[in-house]
Length: 364
Image (tube, rainbow, N blue to C red; front, side, top):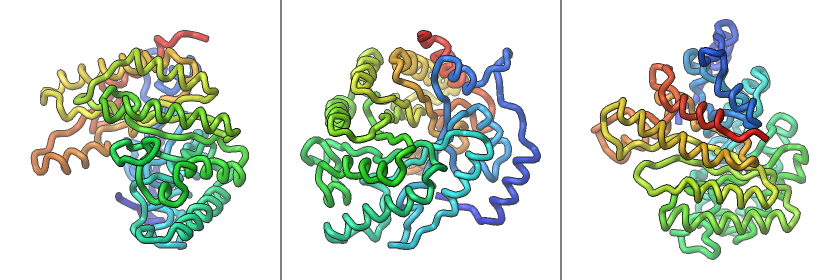
């Protein structure tokens, strides 16, 4: 992942502050942020380092009321070497969010994947120490500055064959199925004011080994955490919609309602569309993507507890799916079109689909 020099970031921030433009808007002046706000939803986007180096891209963030970190708060970024913390990139996003008046969601404290290599081979006791120390160090630094923590990301992966459908990894090795509960309790002890979220993937789809398997496991975990008094404020459902997978939007809407009955807020937390299986023709692809987004979001938003919609970036130019396409397809590259704006920062049908779903949300 690209990183940025201190001097370069500072110079870019000064340029952005001097040349900031008004939000991209509909004819009536509405942005996705204002449309969402009008129906009790916070609209946001994940932000990488490009917001400091690409002025045109940063201007799109005038649409947002919330900014989520992409990689800046992950352990592999904060503690690439054991016991050596580098807060530079996280600090820049904290500063940016504060200056722009946006809610900051720090994603994520712990994930079984994408961990620093030095964790490999540590004893159980050492892993437990590292886990607790990481919470104490990171959360205390940002107490009062981060409004929302994704404390745990993707705890489940049934294909790993672990009890309860949990994914294998260092934290499951260290604490077993209680690792999620321990994380939330310790974070809350350090920062009692932040809202704490559990983030999970795949629940949007109806694939047998993915959404169908993960949904009940996540529902049970959320119920157990709430019953134990764990301060779980919300659940993020990633919603990287894959056009190659089966969907039942009404069933997903019903699942959101089940989660809401457990007393948690729900975020559509990483919305985009994986269009690898769609035709090459851009107009055709864009229409299919927009239809998928609008149908999906309309069902999700029928549950009042769904109060965040966060896209995983705003422009196709910086989508993580570009790298995934190149990894899977080799040299035959086709620009993925998963987000509300294209690679020239122009609004696409996906933007209108998000706006349409928000506008159709039933009023309280």
